Amino acid sequence: MPDQVKQQRFSLITEKGLADLRQLIGVPIEDTLEPWCHEATRDNIRHWAHGIGDDNPLWCDPAYAAKSPYGRLVAPPSFIYPLNRVFSGYVGGLPGVHAMFAGMGITWHKPMRHGDEFTTKVWLKDLVEHQTRFAGRSIRQIYRCSI
Image 1 (cartoon, one colour):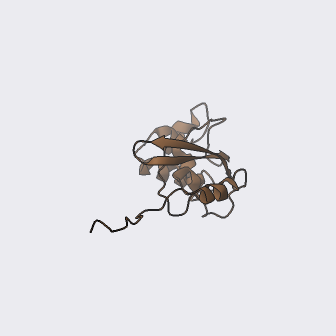
Image 2 (tube, rainbow, N blue to C red; image 1 turned 135 degrees about the vertical axis):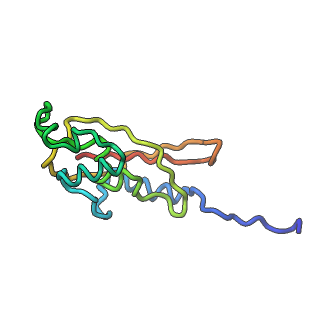
Image 3 (cartoon, rainbow, N blue to C red; image 1 turned 30 degrees about the horizontal axis):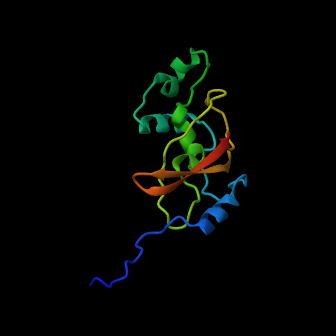
């Protein structure tokens, strides 16, 4: 079968796909699934902490937390994940092209404390092209989120 034409088995990054994705830079992401949590309730904080295996009394013991500098329960830093699914990689991208979560950078301005309510705003900030040994051409999608 030397005359067989090699068939493309996987989707590729195309210039049209990139151009379409670039059109979304700076546009708020509003059509997404509802977040798991809108507020830091005692149960939400405790369930999250126990779910990740962290029973720090600052997030799980109201009496202990009341004596802390925060004066009440505090949510673990990773509690940002249930506040918007974008933190877990639930974003748009290039049609048919496999996506991989590569990490995030977070700047904290204040702790998330029991009783706090959250509204998040997310938008695509930038696209950065890379040549990788693993996948060849790849595109890093950078999102910005404010809480």
